[in-house]
Length: 250
Image (cartoon, rainbow, N blue to C red):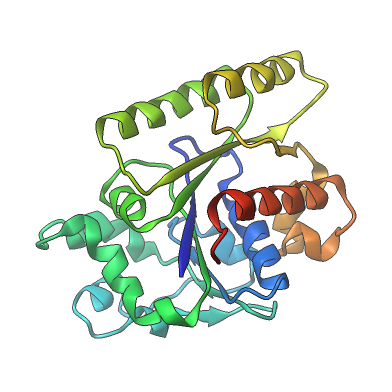
């Protein structure tokens, strides 16, 4: 099972919309796909019309009274399952900090279901914490949405600085521009400059678009209700690029 995570220290940059749309596209192509909403806000869970409830919460997983498989819910889309957000996920750091290998607990939780899926996509909370360290250890690639603004790029360099100090040999960093507006000069300038400074920036940019905002009202991926829109086509291009860069052997 390959693991991708949508991650950024900064909130409101398009992590959840990316996770939801990529999971939808992966399942549409026939991959057995699981989306884990690890953000206690539960936006991905809301989008798929699933109630955010894990009986016993994170403590039940910690004490092995339940396995992660008990938390998996089906969505309305064939081949796409969801582990819904649960407010107890905010206690992940506290619950697992006293274990022998605290940064490997997420991978241990995933072990019983790893053979049931081809791809796991994790929607992360905007933080650096023990949860983040677990995700960095478990994931094959981090998808980092960046709005082409000064503050967003500054946050990206903070992420790079973190990984320079705590390198992970296997983890790919795949930043891409999100909420891009070609009518804004700053967006054009940053989107032209950053790929020269960091060679890993992906070529696909997700546009600032009404259809992405409508996901909250439609409670569905863009491709399911506006398949021919610019945003849906952009997510398709992004998915293709991710497959080429990070999922060649899937």
